[in-house]
Image (cartoon, rainbow, N blue to C red):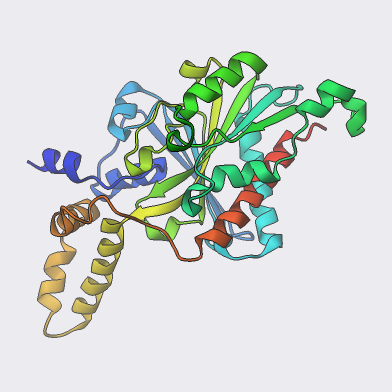
Length: 323
């Protein structure tokens, strides 16, 4: 019965870290999934690497085999340029580790997924707007035009969404890849999270590609090495959560208040016996069916996405710089 309920009511998340945490909450070890953590006290940036090494681990996590690196920075939603520079530098460092042959000159296609007219889905287009594009200059005038002996050819595209173009983003990108032959594709997209504390404060990098819209249930064809024929690195930031997550967080506060009350303490202790997954199941049952498909985003997301778009584009510019 419980396995059925987990499959039916599992809260959507695009973050491999949150999938891993779901098993930790149930005190379950996953074979074929490795976890590494590092915390920089000076910058207050926590880096977690989830490595899925086997098909069994991939099935348990619901994600392809590969490396998922998560940067958590609590102050990333604050408009502090100096702090965002530190985040950009950290992100660039990990991105370089995933880039194939990153010391050599490469042709790199950056894809800004999403809808620029919908704020929480506009992260990808915002990154492209701030990206240093070099392919056309190198092709037309040579590397000397940029004053460097070695330089990557960077191109960018905003393929839009199906409602705007009538085409899958994967179809558009596949055509561009076939025409321009990049060495690697980097796809930027907005994600969904299970924890409200990670909204706009978390960046995930993965070398497994990406499936646009999967976090909110709009399953589109993926951008992967198998579908495009070249390595695909995905970068994303969670900008939305399900309503069940909001209600669940409220329940946590309610349970805490009950435990502090002499009259309601026993009820609070009973609810505390439920693990996080069971609480999410209960919440989803309570709000079904009308609110189950609703996603929520913070009211200041327009400024936040603009700022994050610049932070990620700066990280890409740093990572693409050839010494």
